[in-house]
Amino acid sequence: MEPLLVNFTPTGMLPMKQDCPYVPIAPSEIIENIREACEIGITSVHLHARDNNTEAPTYQKDVFAEIIDGIRSFAPDLVVAVTTSGRQYQEFEKRSEVLSLTGWQKPDMGSLTLSSLNFNNVASMNAPQMIQSLAERMNQAGIKPELEAFDVGMLNYAKYLIHKGILHPPYCFSLIFGNIACAQADFLTMGLMLNNVPEQSTLQLGGIGKFQFLVNSVAVAAGYGVRIGLEDNFWLNEERTTLASNAALLMRVRSLADTCGRPIMTPHELRAKLHLKPGNGDYGC
Image 1 (tube, one colour):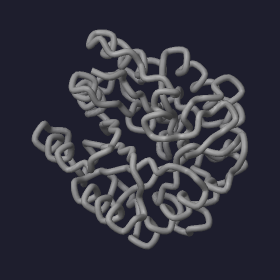
Image 2 (tube, one colour):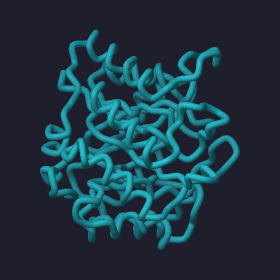
Image 3 (cartoon, helix red, strand yellow):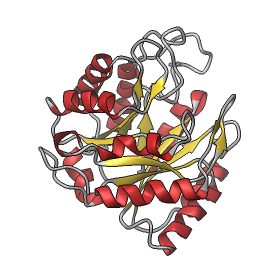
């Protein structure tokens, strides 16, 4: 099997310090978590930014720029993806602001959720025109979409965007299982999703909450990449008695990878697979 792609999701939009004291909120905390993650072994990072005072998600590119600056001071080749999520903001200008970063601060990738969906208590709104506009902005900026699919219909919509010439190979998909209103983390559903992924795709599989370890285990054993971090789950066990840290979650995946004889994919290897620029000062696609 090929090396294991580890896409690290340290923060997300929902976990607060009151939920889990280990979730990084301030740019300095996020940067330090990523530094530790690089020592354990990761391939890429999926970034969300937070307001340091309220802990609420922020779209402001200056906050993302501070985080990316910090990351690239010690990991100048790490593949960096930024969120354009529709869970908090609906205005295109806000969701796409981070895509205007350039030079040393330019992200390599931007998240692109392929349909609207419901989480436990909130909706993520992604109208067709918004999805296509964000994809076109990424194309203009030379930023590769990180395609997020929570259900099989989203994969079909990706094929529609491919047919329209809006998405270009090679593709990178994050398949996310276990959300309450989307694809569940059972083998039949996972197989259905995997069977509908477009050709020329690199995959990483993630699980929400208690399903994170199950989905990561399947992905490692079956030869796919993993999405892992406190964004999707902040408990170390299914009984919810032990809070997780990002380092603990990553060490568990590293142990799985070692057991299956899969070295961690390097950022350089992922850049080659996705036709990204080489890093070390030259970013995007």
